[in-house]
Image 1 (tube, rainbow over the protein chains, first blue to last red):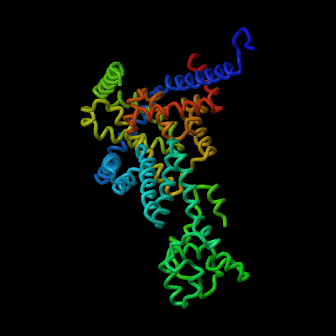
Image 2 (image 1 turned 120 degrees about the horizontal axis):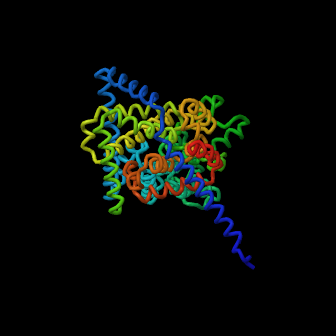
Image 3 (image 1 turned 30 degrees about the horizontal axis):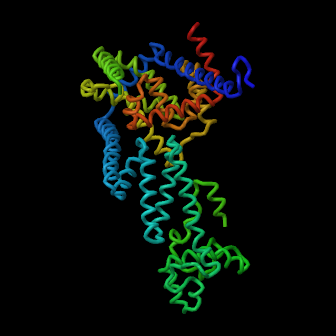
Length: 268
Length: 193
């Protein structure tokens, strides 16, 4: 039953919120009211100092400052070009120019770049299991995070989706081969069939087959354990004949540094 | 933008141009405290804020005649300063030489308060503003401290007005939740005294 004065927990909460809002507004307005107040002598000193600095600049220094100022306009130009390319559906071109603008934290270029890279990675994923997709996902995630950190909170949900997609992408090949029934992108049926080849053929095949490289990257620590030492090929203790000459960037990019949750899940 | 807001903006543009017409001294004395304190509330480092404010003001003086033809020359000053600060912070962040942690910021503010009474009076508010994401802090700073409407703020930051509104409401919400605000009562007392 509601008391006669109309006080309910909801009303109390509203009153507290309103009071906090009023206090914040009052504090900001109080600061704004006095922000222009500065001792006259201090202002005069600062102006004299600025005039001296300005007058003592060399010609080269003036040109350098001019160029620096012009570069601020270039960020805007890059952003405009990117927006046009984005509107035209040219994602690669949009990414190129958004990258230029985002490098200097221009407007919401970070968030836009992330969405474009996200869309591009989806395009790659639709065609095949390409390593480019992984690079794009990682870069998109980094830019979503950058946008989120400066206040574009819309970056949070796509970031979670990307991490989930990356996890699923990482887990898929091993899970498919565990029971031997899943699809395999390898022409000869996966790493287990590589063992039937001659050594030179096996090396050549693994060098050219991303699917086998991914499998190999996952069983390497296991090989190390079976040999009674640290994971093979992962440190100074790697055997002299070493692992197969794989491109580490393609086979084992490692966990993403920006996500403790992701790093934890990838700790294998 | 409504007709009233448009007129308001034109009036303030006219005021800025009048200050320019009155000379460098008058313009500087009006805008320097606003610019440097806005940047102080936005940056994590007082020295960086002051360097950026100095560079922006020198650039303004270099382009004085050209800026006399601008509708809002004061907006140019704040726009250049904001972009310059972001650029420097991004560079510093990329090179891992940027202290953005709370302890560094509070230490820096305490040192700044020794030479700036405004910071001393509004220490908790400035610290709370510094803890906000940069876009939220920029919108609040330009809107409250610079006296710009949301449309003008959006133009300075090269964002949509809707985005500026969103940053403002999120920033104010976070400020409301922060613990620092009540200490500014001290400042209110000083003003009324």
